[in-house]
Image (spheres, one colour):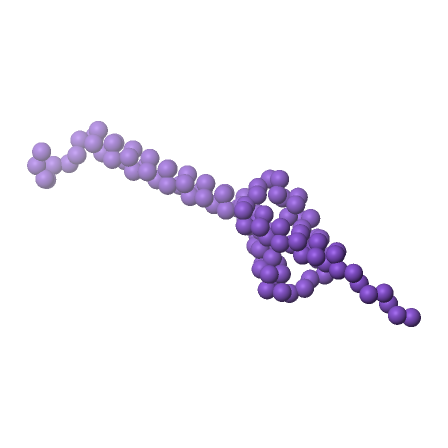
Length: 111
């Protein structure tokens, strides 16, 4: 076949079919990626708050008991669905902080 001749009809069909197949696969991967990010965004957002709070607890910052209990309740309800090791670590730190706060005896008010 010389350089100047056009491709036969079957050759053009194969090229177009291959190009369309590649586009379809790439579009499918793109849609799958976007849907995965939409589905997992709430999990990572919740875990990010828990991780941030746990890091601040390790830095020595004190939190109100109610705040920690609320944060831990949200984490516990989601732990069943999907547990990441970092989230489990952070939840353990928050639980430990709550246990430490519960063990501290508050002085009786004078008067």
